[in-house]
Image (cartoon, rainbow, N blue to C red; front, side, top):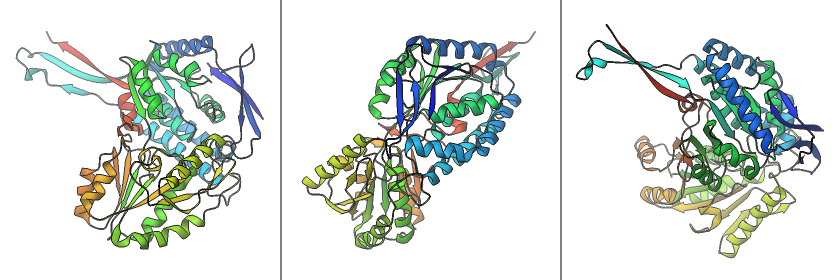
Length: 477
């Protein structure tokens, strides 16, 4: 059992009247660890430390040194893959195989950041292009912006933390990280990795606590230069209101559409969409929630899809054979159960699943749904997928775009012209052709439109948003 707390300049803040929060396994409720929650004084100390270390150390640290630290951190994380995968299974309920995959991606994110550290470039500006600009030289440099406030979710406690921390370090910034209170232990382990890799003490600080107690003061503090947040649309909108003139990156929710046309490889689409809908019990922002299938192949798709869903193994995340572990809390599973029951009362049919045992919720396939049902128009964030028929390409586009969200979409077709038409017409931040909406690589610009957020992640693009363009002009004699 791990007992930890906020981490400031390498020092754990424990006891002294701090409220202790228990971290329990979502699968069986066993105690995994305890964390001592931050006080407002702790938060102030964390921000002050990050602010001081930025000016004293990080902004002056040369690119080759930042890259060296990141490369070493990646190697250390990779060497401890099994340890990190185990804690992901214990505190997040993530199947152990998926935990190892998340560690692998996290290692890659750090290595991307190490590579990008040496590519942060400016440019020369031709000053004589303007009247009176003769005998002048202009240049633009990218400079770090200061202290990054990072607020991260429970579903990817390692990889999504690193999508904020690694680019910040690469750019020469410091970080105050507030991890999800349900999955805080991974972050403390990660901080040790960066410490052992040689990151200056105080460059990465962690504050433990709930959003209202710690998150909002973090967002409003004037010493924070940028907020990067992954979570719900409601909280994202609140952050946007509080942040003022700070830069913000908000990676919010979705109810991602996936469109299967009659010329698609149905076997490949069905196989991919099982993974796309049910990975990590559907608790993924880009999970394949809505599957639109052309009517001429609708039943054929269902016949291929259902047996694959029924083969999924639901159970203990520590077992190698488990495909779906628990939802993050029993309350989350109860909500999923209630949404399915509500959809049934409104006319939907459950083809498989729909049952709950504690925090375990069966992979569920719904048909005969309508656009106004919660399971279609809102973000389910659960192992629930709706399969919906359509007739024409225009109808598919209309149905897919009929959403307040727009993060990623998947399109399955062998018609290259159709593929590019859909890529243009779908109102999402990303479109995958012959791939699920839930597929993500860590080096491309990732982010949504509408209620799915603002700004982009992906290491190179995050670095751009964690730096400022600074102009320097010289008048020659």
